[in-house]
Image (cartoon, rainbow, N blue to C red; front, side, top):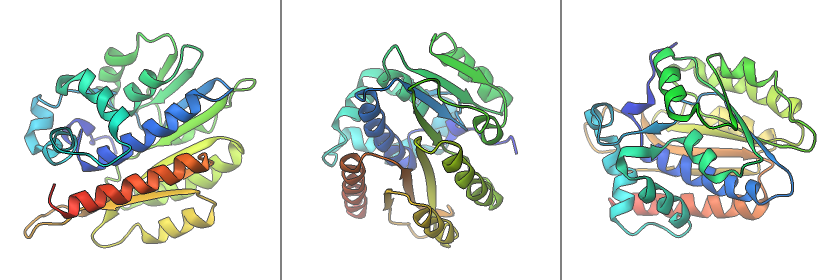
Length: 262
């Protein structure tokens, strides 16, 4: 399906945890001894204007990144929030822009995006960066054809839209292939937490696959809220243990903050 556009949801509560976790993992990888090869299967447009018509239609950033910037965020969010403040609300960094901001000159990145309008915007936003190769293609199939060069450290993020229940099934089929394809690669997955718990079985499967990072946070659902989501989670494989533990603490603190209505 090619209807999903993340601009309507940019900066929401799910983005907050996803991008804060990704930022910590990126910083750790950038400090490592090996050049980073960064890949995304579902890149979106890379950067977002939170004051624009798409973002303001649902106003989801109001309870996400904008609330966090105005309040007192939990420990660990500071470096990522500093970057967001520096970019301003008109240039909120999605995961591709965040990666390029954190990775050094010797890194390279391949970004997949199938949606024609999103790919066009992605090209306009990030295509000038010499480290980047953009591909208008299925990220699942395309990514599995890639391999790190020499001593590169692969870091891949899969962040599908989950427009239908089949999206979880697709990721469940792709993940074991990815782990086998890149036996030393760092794999990060974003997982929505649904009110009906449809993701629970997949979460258990990920744990059985050897995920060493499972960081989730739920928010209170207001009466009459028609959204099917009630939380967000990041699942990671081969994440450095200190980074994984920090991410899990951040998620717990974020959930506690949301429980207070912040």
